[in-house]
Image (tube, rainbow, N blue to C red; front, side, top):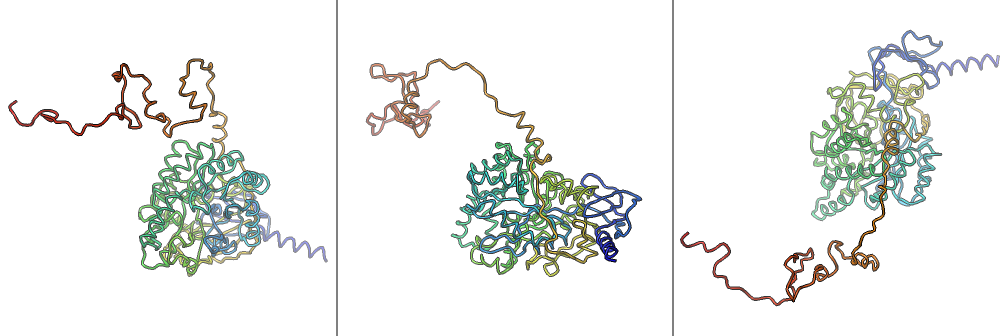
Length: 579
């Protein structure tokens, strides 16, 4: 009797882990086709027509719908301690909202203060996340300071902790920002480890200067947030970061490309062959920076993020064009939410407004509406920018980012024609504000499956804290590093073999090198007298020698000056007279 009960119980559990998706259209990044999908124990086991499947599986009718890989959001900040407070969405509410919108995996950022051990910070984030996440997650690690210890800890994180990406900041001066030489060292270490270098690209020095100027002029509201960090501040840093990464022979992932100017930099450098990936945000694709000038302070502050949304209303469409045409590679959210009372920390000074907006729940629908529905991209490209490309870059593919036999059963049954209206009153996030408030979007998930479990079932969300897993991201993604490794072999600098120079060397150079004495301008000697190498003949200057000196010295500086000289006719002759 006991054995019979055990068998029945086992059959019930097994049946619960079996799903049969019937009649849908499979959409991957490279193809679409009609097929049924059989899932068991969290893995896609069969794919095709007329499948023979075990009994007891739950059948979900997907006829007329799309079966797509679950979304991957590679840029979130759940419960991040930042600017004197902590993000409103923690790893539970944030991942719950992600699943509601069709995202089945997030990659969050470990970002701690300067001087904090990277390993300690990593363990802190794992402690926050493991017990709360409703979907799978991975971690990037922020490098906010540099030393031999940091380099060693990066190696440990890659080899033992399942991390393959490190982010540096060119903004947030005195908090997170790294100088260029340290940034180069981080990129070199990433290249050595086969990790992905990531960068927040804004010129932190200029932002600091312009912020102070605006405050001194009495401009302290949210509009100043955009004023102190205009497009060119982002574009300059983007170009500089790509240059430094290229010199370090490291791939580079530019997080949150927010302006047309920065987008053009990424696009141009990709066409030149640079290994650089640009990330567009749902915020930058779905709305713009005109909100910073809204008369309602809460509304304006609710849109404050860094880099800021751009006031040029053509920016979202332009960024979507870049994303659709592979100039930008990935979509994300930078989801980092703060309630009204948290944003109010900066009510008297925009520099204290916590930076961050929502997006993790609405990203998939925003991109479908603004990208596919508008005719800018096809469903395959939609899958690429919402899931597959992130999986490839961070070495999760094809376990993630694809509907295929052997892949994880992270699947969304997507209705391309269903629509919904976005609102803070109905979203699943903990934050009290939504930057897409009132926007009607087409493209809605009907069923969301994560690890073979149906968590969104005909619009009903059924999640469990701790159901998600930490997913290790191995180094040396072929998608990222294939060109890098080839260049290491083929583009090594080569010295020119030549005979030693045995000719004369002027005395002055020997004296300078021996005494380590050098002019502030190495082209010009220390004194004007030493500029003239030829001696005077009988007190008369050698006419074959120029009296010009970069220092401004003249050969007759020691002669007394005449007060004036009478001139009968001006240069060129008089203007009157007969000619």
